[in-house]
Image (cartoon, rainbow, N blue to C red; front, side):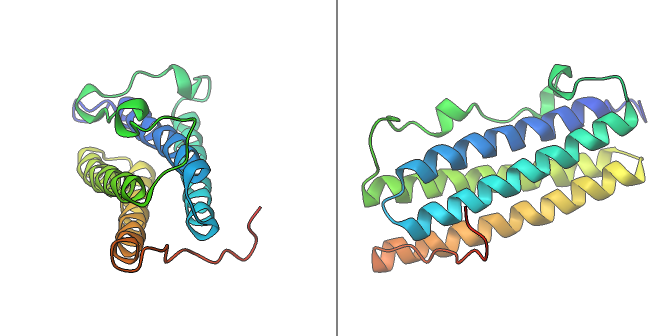
Length: 169
């Protein structure tokens, strides 16, 4: 521990955010009305999976014998539960209003993730952990902007702005 800070707890909280993002974007992509939106959401889910892998790699660097899933997240940094953040029935696709509401939730999650990563980066001394948290904050802020652009298009045009992945699938 550095300065009384539980670095592994901070990283476990970061891992929890990424696990949440993977599930959130997976569920949302399965219900999106348009393929452009579904592709965007799958891409964001893949990003979250990569972030989780980076966090777990950092956890193993610090404590090689640890299973990252077993580490207790720092209580002050614990996020929301996926079921609470995605209150839509899993057995139906979404109407436009539902997609907008889900995007609003996604934006809030990205805002909170960015804030948590920035706050956590100020608590740690380890330069590699600090760099990872700062990089994740920047990426999550980019996700927020992308979701905001798509919400604008959905509200004004009724269609996803989307995303054109080079290699989707």
